[in-house]
Image 1 (cartoon, rainbow, N blue to C red):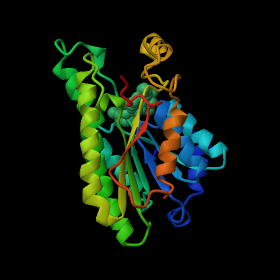
Image 2: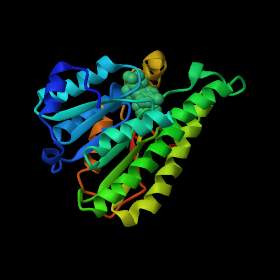
Image 3: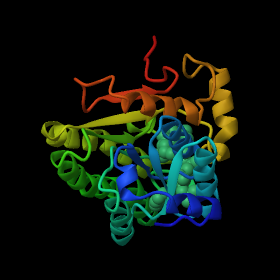
Image 4: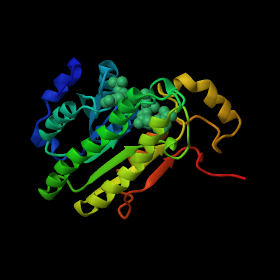
Amino acid sequence: MCVSNPVLREYEMTMSNSTISTQRLALVTGGSRGIGAAICTKLGELGFHVFVNYVHNEEAANKVAQDICEKGGTATVLPGDVGSESDRRRMLSVIREYQRLDVLVNNAGITSVGRRDILEATEESWEKVFNTNLKGPFFLTQAIANEMIRWIREGRQPQGYIINVSSISAFAVSTNRADYCLTKAALAMMTQLFAQRLADEKIQVFEVCPGVIASDMTAPVKEKYDRLIAEGAWPIRRWGEPEDVALAVAALVQGYFPFSTGNRFLVDGGFHIRTL
Ligand SMILES: NC(=O)c1ccc[n+]([C@@H]2O[C@H](COP(=O)([O-])OP(=O)(O)OC[C@H]3O[C@@H](n4cnc5c(N)ncnc54)[C@H](OP(=O)(O)O)[C@@H]3O)[C@@H](O)[C@H]2O)c1
């Protein structure tokens, strides 16, 4: 368990496995910034104990956890590269101490390295993007699902939710981000595969599919998207905010969709609507 902020460390010490067992728990990968940070904040507000995962930016992750605590919630900062097998194992060993995880949000993601044209794309970028955006979420989901199944069967938690944050790049081509598009398209199938396999285990699996959202990821291409918005590239003429995606995740894990699984939930301002 890594809580480097003294305030949080003190808080952690007041928590024991027995007191937390009635509280719902959520792990958000890439929770330090952007969409993931907004999801952490929202789940904290809903009363979840939030594991705020990050890979590099410890300060930002601490800030997210601290904000949750200041609003009366609880959080643990959990470092780890989702693309690394040993890091995933270490993250899981921390969560195992709590014997419960109600929600996994596979949010961590990176864009194509250098945004190179498909004719110049490199294997190096492919490996990095696939590790982070697809292999990591797949094997993290596999590992967490096995634990969730056990905890549900033991009556430690009533059910589970797994949310995969994909992208409109799953169906809209960007020829300078082929590896990114491919991973996001594959996340849609991954959602359906796990949804099918886990339905009997009381675990629902959803894909949340954001459109263009203001974050560090889109900051380098801000001018391009400003122009597209002005031209009406999607019906709701504004940037999406991380909070827009967080609200969708919050809705899905509240239990309002008990007869649904494997769905794609678009948060894209209507970008997917085709017009003539
Ligand atoms: N922004 C958009 O327009 C948009 C649209 C559609 C989909 N999405 C998807 O939404 C998700 C979040 O995007 P964002 O815009 O919020 O990105 P962001 O602002 O760049 O933040 C990325 C987050 O992922 C973490 N991360 C990166 N690699 C990681 C790894 N290997 N292991 C663990 N954490 C890792 C980062 O941690 P550190 O802080 O430690 O670096 C950070 O918290 C991504 O999956 C992205 O593909 C974004």
